[in-house]
Image 1 (spheres, each protein chain N blue to C red):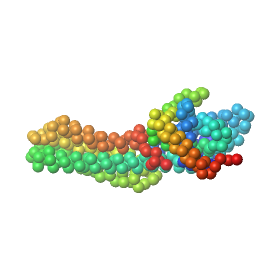
Image 2 (image 1 turned 180 degrees about the vertical axis):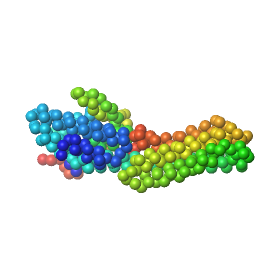
Image 3 (image 1 turned 45 degrees about the vertical axis):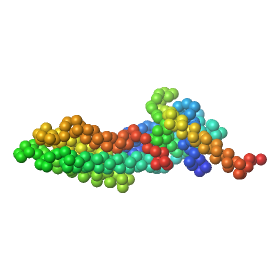
Length: 105
Length: 211
């Protein structure tokens, strides 16, 4: 999972762009969207969401969720802007790498 | 290790403020219980369900370290902000004394008895606040408490000094007006506000400082 280093924040923002979610759901969604490739240790995601919230990209509140009280995270406008910039940067980077390395055959 | 042991271990390792600590523990415990319940629903025995949930979470020390790093940044920024507030307090006192207040601070025999101890207490609080802020900047384990203590100490110093100035202005002709004094008090409060907001987690910290 070391390839994820530096991209975790962008992945979390992308997951939360569609709908607010609690930490457990963020991890599940990451696993599902990546078809199991991003099966993160659950403990790595919580410091990441707290960091994103501290930086103003997420906001959170306690909500009743399936009979439990859970901390639900949602993207702020600033977070949405960060996600858009991250998407552009990633596309440019991935395109450049693919150009050099070539597509898999 | 049981789920309760894990949460207790995490609580021991966390070096964050009390509100943040409560939130982290509640969040992690809720996640673990949901994870265990999901496995119990699939007829996995409780001890195995807890073991599996905990292994997915990783060691409590590593998890705590992730939170502690962020809190250390916040605490150090708050300590730096307290030092800035102490600087504003010091400079505004100097400016008042030099430019506004007439040479003799109090008319003969008119100074209230409380002035001496209030002045000494203000100086002690300011000095204590600066020392605590430096401890918070340098330390690890007690840095959050030191930053909080520094903020309280400098705020107390500001309150004593402001009270001193208001009392004096009421007795001495040519003193700053109440509006001018209120402006200085507001400036001091504003200078300490960033530190307070950082300590209660209400001020953004740039992501680049947290990664």
